[in-house]
Amino acid sequence: MANIVIDRELIENIAKKNNEEYFQKINDKVSLILTNAIENLSNKIPFISLKNVVLQPYNEIMSGAVTDNTIFHYLLGIENAQLELNTLKTSLFWRNFKSRLKYAWENRRKKRKKKDKKQDNLLNIDLNNSKYSIYNLADDLFETLRLYLKETSIIYQDNNVVYIVGKDDFGVNCKIKIETCFYSNDYFKFYIGKRKGFEKINFTCRANCLQEKVRDVGSNFIKMLTIFNVLYFYANNENPNAIFMESVLYNIPDKLFEEKSIYNCFLKIVNYLTLKPINNFNSINDLGLKIYEDKMLGSEQQVGFLKMLRMIAGKN
Image (cartoon, rainbow, N blue to C red; front, side, top):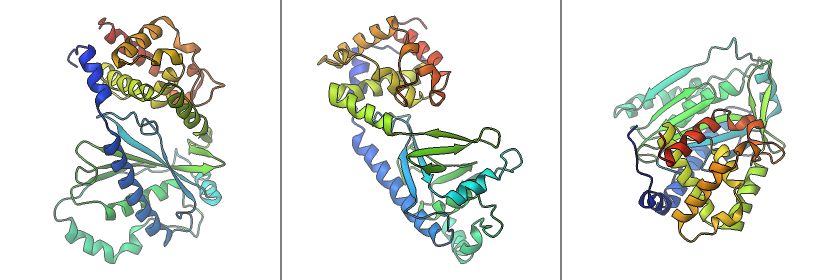
């Protein structure tokens, strides 16, 4: 990647960019098509309805610190004990995952007429033998979402995740990621195999911490999150783990955010981070854990973060 000059102009331009309207438009559109798809599925599948699903923003869309490279990642949590039990019975090692890529060309409407007649046969429903799992649900969600997207959209699936790329539906270069999982007692649960069972995450602590920090230091917190998300991408050619970046900035003393100049604020925070070992920082996901102890943050994030700091210092 070409070298960039990290100066006042760049930092101020990143901070000035207002993505709120764009961000809200994407959220509204995702909510609409998922509502339509779930209503459709609920007529055929007893495991899902609008009453037992929760749509949760997962990455930086939770804080609003979105950038041009943001992937709009959502968790679709399903609260259903039978579906969870069925999934436990299905081994990830023996199941043949489908990874499909579907292009919707201009002649898709002609094909759709034929598909609509066979809509009841479109879904992979096998309810009688209790083998219908979260992965079958992802399959059927994939098929149903196609009905509510424009012909130019691309939709594909990888295991329990559905991806959508559609400039006419969401905007140029906008990528949507919808991950199906379980939801119970405020926890989102990811099934990761018979040996390991479920990985659980609760967003309550994270949401409370984000609200607290914005209340205490104002909009500079979100601006700094956005700036660091962009710079991390410049340094590593990939987006940071949003929970990791939020954790780092949450642990920054409030007084360092008080500068009226966002560039001066940026310089103070960078200087602080070059002197303070972030291993001692708490995870925003769970304040009882250090950053390196929280598995949801990713161990490789610290390496990428240090690379970003070296880039800022001009040491690449």
